[in-house]
Image 1 (cartoon, rainbow, N blue to C red):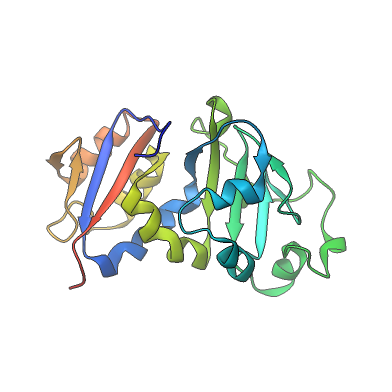
Image 2 (image 1 turned 180 degrees about the vertical axis):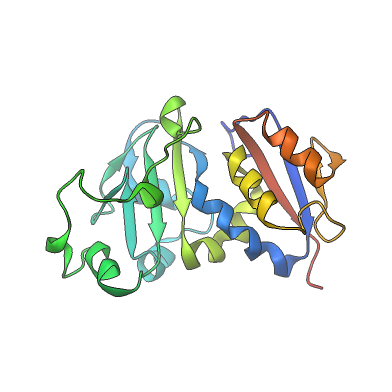
Length: 211
């Protein structure tokens, strides 16, 4: 576990290595990364696993900070902020929000951009309720690229993220994807009930290798 991460419950999911990307969608809900003081977006991202300078330049085409597009990696962030990363998005919207893109002038004025999903947290798990965390959201191919790296270390994320996933799939807590709550094997309905008692969980995937 990374220093500074605290959670009341620890969830481990065991699954084949080639199925890890299936859970990449959980990263869209935001993971809580410990920080100390203010720092640039670049410094914050480089402190996260898998986010090298080369990867950021090649793959991260859109950055939102608290729901607003950030063109400069020197933009300052601090505990309570939300940072969202996306690869290139299709169409005109992608061109408008692309970092340092030619169509940036077409953006709405601050406060008029509908980016609730990309850049903000709206429930009681928002990062601003804690001292020392930035909420990092990963989307599309970036989430898929980094899922194995983040989940092998373990992530602190909203309990509702796994709850929503559990309700959409039949494989979670099955023999294909067994789940452990504080090291105790649990079934799907039991997992959902337990998740209802938590705001956040520490989730780790234990990959067993390809099938």
